[in-house]
Image (tube, rainbow, N blue to C red; front, top):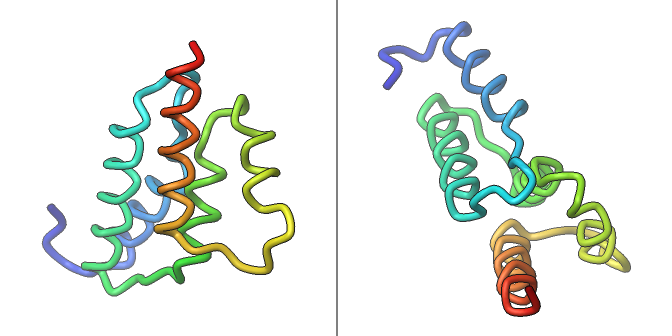
Length: 100
């Protein structure tokens, strides 16, 4: 997508990631795909985030209706793992879909 590893390209990609927000009642799988694409694009630019930073950025990109879920997910934890957070979000969504 981007030819070089210029500072402008890094800024553009970081801005895209930091402004990524899921709409209320948006498609979670599309949002996760967009989030992972942004992170992968940055990795190709040699910008790497820790698993905890990715988890925190993902949680903050969720809609305001997920505020209580975020709080519950982080309660009593010292660190977060990105893959665990993704699994918890997907489980939460499945439960919400089943309960209507």
